[in-house]
Length: 475
Image (cartoon, rainbow, N blue to C red):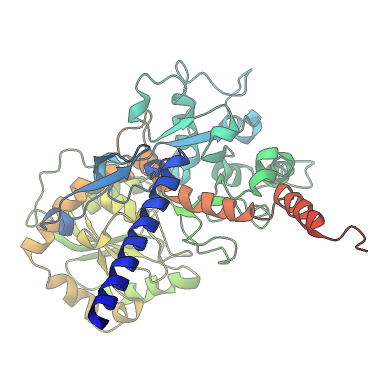
């Protein structure tokens, strides 16, 4: 009898459990709401598959099962390389004094008609911080481009449809050209423009709505936006590095590191090899620097007498760029040493020259490092190790032809990621920066959604619920 009773109880609980599960299933179906995954907000984590993934047995595709209304399912196969999110950008129509007028453009409208006229950027070293120019041109181009599917970013006219808000202030050229006082000026044009920009942004509904969290502001020159950055810090800054920013204002979690535009020419038809590059290690630039750049002079005294090392002072004057171009193309390795800030244009000149970069900068942050493995084409040396007697030169001499050739080939594969051009092309620097922006969008949306938890609308709703639950004679 006891055995029969236990079996009866087991059957009873089994059938009630099944009925309970089925009842919940039918309740969920009756709501008429499908369960879904929004793949549009997923970052493009597989944009650049490195060699480890390419050579593994892991498939570059992901099978995703989606439960749809009505209980049916279907499998969607997403290619990691095809999952690129096109970021929607609302760009303020700032007056020309903030952008192209700083380059000497004199137009009668806000923007130049770039289908017939593309204003030139300033030449020389100004070019290395010109990213504001290329990104603005790319957004303007998206308004009439024939094939928008090839764009990583498109301009939208309604800010409510945008993923991010772009601020087209050419801050780097503003610093380079307009920081000095003109006759009868008490404050420079650069300072005045920053003040105007802050006042403009603080008055915009878009800024108030997000407190600037979804705004993109460019300050690639280390000294650009020096007066305004402390007021605009909630925005996403696009920078060269974080050397002159406190972490509360700029950091790798919130902001984006963009490459310098290289100054030396691209090595288009590179038929060189290990044996045809006679110089082992190359550096040409300012040797005596402050802050972290003190290491340059210490390395100079350690390496200057090595027969296969070129380590000398140089600048863009007196054919300096052509000398650097020839020197890098004739060298196996190119030194990128910390200067006044952790980064320098020299790294990107080396990449353009297919000269394997040797990075000695402990605090450096690199563009696209969330999707790109720099150790495949760069050598990293800690400052403390580089200053050890003979450490650096012995390290370079122990890298053989096979290893150097592997890195050299990888350099030729990745160089497109650092090319600024108009119109932009797939996976060039402009599109890579926009893709980096798109990978920030989910985090921005999460922050904004969290900030809305106790928005005025929700607070009002909570007050109504509270008042309805209180006794009528309360208070």
